[in-house]
Image (tube, rainbow, N blue to C red; front, side, top):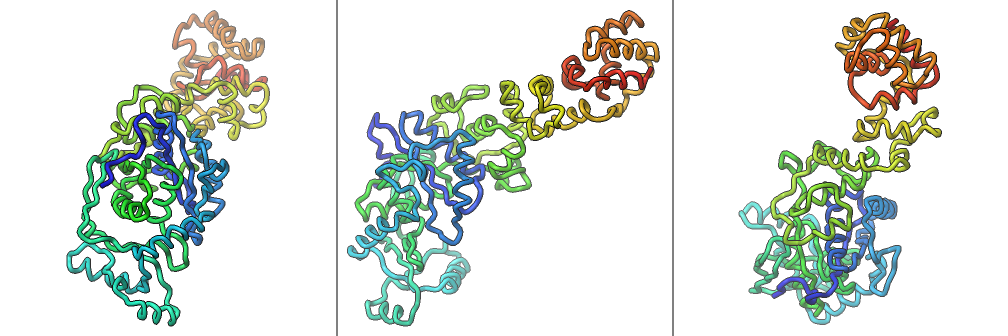
Length: 475
């Protein structure tokens, strides 16, 4: 019936990301947006951003603004959308009511829809009865056969009515899914579904399909939880004589244990990861590889992802999200930051003494040892706070170094301040120590830790007199 994408061979694809502004942008939706962007860019096509806000009670402008900000933070830019109008707009469904009304009127004229007066309670009781009988729940067709007189009588009583699409009997709905391959559905298994809510607003099945057609969308990648929606929308588009896009239903994201992704697996929204200090390039690289294979190793830019993106590489199995793997990408991304980027990333944590001209040197010193900004906090306390306590096992090393060692080190620090080479040379001359025996006691006395950022740049960053004071503790 519908073999797949309507894109002509060689034609640039038009994709879309169509979120509902009812909450934050979560990881699954962010990945959907990314895949649609990469599909568009791979084929030198266009990405549309459409805000599906027909649910007036749950849609909020604040969510729309936050969603667009999150997308931009990730680097996902659209070619047309609410803020970038073109001839196919507007790109808020709340502004497209006249278009929906015109198409619904066409369906009414063709007698493809009918009013349904069933209450939510009646629908729920019917659903429970079907489940109790071992049948999949679908609308029982209660109002399909009402006569004009019966419909008028119910309207006169003030009963609210939805508008349902009359699904034809005995049909086979077939299409080729870009991820799951050939699909086959029987229309007899699909109940008549709502295309207009009782408040007069267009329902998802209807507005989503009509907008794809009127906006020229040729390929729609979305979550596989929409797979069973597709035959309904294909029937709608056929009834309206409108073109259908090619559909691809991407496997859902689950936690590392295979369970549906939830708070216990970590953060769920893009905002939460941004606020924790994860970098957009790290999050993009992790999302890209969740359900998409065939990418070259290493941290990729968006153009590099687009170059190797293909729907044939999208997997059918659930994609497992693992924050440990995300942290691997994060570490790589942090190590690639330039000096100014690094300072900007760490700035919220930098105390006043560290925010001046030496901020770049401090950031560079900490860079190899931090994955998230919070990892820098203990080192900032070591540099700008009081004398750090020795970690377990360090006291023996310091004690074995002895008073002569630290007296020489403190004297050199008084004269040479932050010059590690000069301090080490003085200690070497006084004690004859070399290698780790020379440098480890210095590191422990100055930082309290045996491992961490290189000691030389940290020593230069210590406030005047601090290095001498810390060394004199053990002299």
